[in-house]
Length: 63
View 1: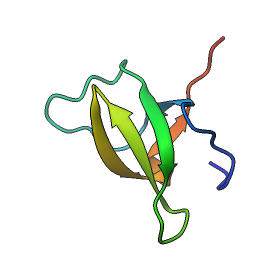
View 2: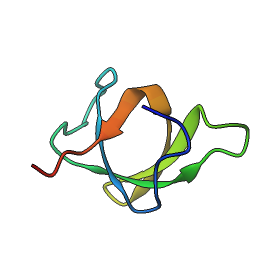
View 3: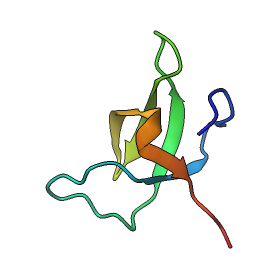
């Protein structure tokens, strides 16, 4: 995914490795970039803030 292209509130899909209690179909909401560059992003997942690598998400297609 190209860096600097996400907008606050944009919905994302997690494509990285799964972990316990992760519901793949549940969208993530982009909250912002980490201060130390653009490799990590803050997302909201089921009401909680999480820090993820940008390589582990893609934009959610609304087709």
